[in-house]
Amino acid sequence: MPEAVRPYRGVSADDRRAQRRSQLLEACLDVVGAEGVAGTTAEAVCARAGLSKRYFYESFADREAVLVAALDAFFEAAREAITPALAEPATSTGERLTRTVAALVGALSSDARTARLYVESSRHPALELRRIAAYDEFALLILRYGLEVDTEPADPRSRLVALLLVSGTTEVMARWLSGDLDLDEQTLVETVAGIGLAAAELLRGP
Image 1 (tube, rainbow, N blue to C red):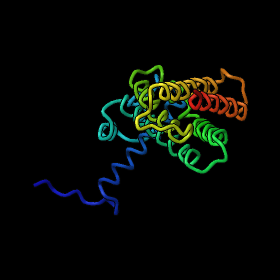
Image 2: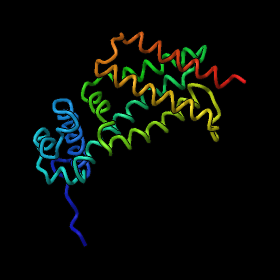
Image 3: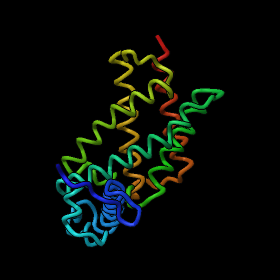
Image 4: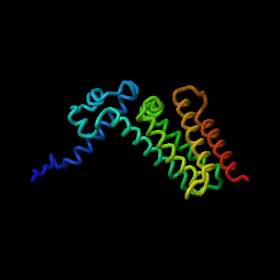
């Protein structure tokens, strides 16, 4: 029978493991912010976190795993940011879309580290696969709450429109974050929301 692991200074083994994982994820973002995705290695993350590689491999199989986990954490934060904007009552679809886009832009631009991870994710196969999967998740949210379209199940035309909105907005925001689009934040939000409103009108048409 395995010996029980005693708490250390009142902190359980599971809590210590969770703390180390959180340290490694923060360190991963720091390294991405400084060196980019290509320069993020297990060694660099451990050095930044002040932890040995033993603790890295306790939580992550390799550098790809920690990068994917960091990207997943970003998508979760983005989902939490836009959910209230989508769910709260609005006087119009345009108002709901505008505040949703504003919340998403805010989530993307609030941390330069996660912004760089997001922008560079398309250049890394494992991260790109996760980003594509996120397109589907966010497309359903936009359809159900933003465009108020029945998603049980969503017809192919509605899904096509939602995927175009999500993937197109993603590309626009990536370019804006990298400095390729010289627009202020308000203009970006209003333009993207206007495109979303036009898409809603298209779906409600004949």
